[in-house]
Length: 93
Image 1: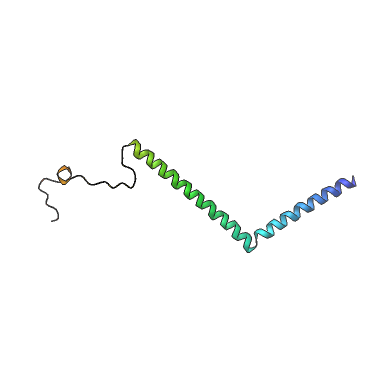
Image 2: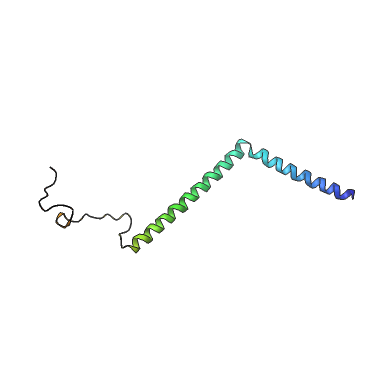
């Protein structure tokens, strides 16, 4: 029975030492730098994934509604075909 308690105590000591070492490393300048670097890398990946998904969805919607691809310039309709301007419109007043 004494051997069981010895092994249990040793395992608890090893576990506590490992946890203490991890906590101490996390609170150093390098540990904080590593954690912040990880957070920023995760945020960058998330931003890139969201941007790719947005572009994909926009392309899908443009194809569905027959709009030109994003970035293709459209010329305005000639003045004689615009319904919002009267026939005698001459420009600025």
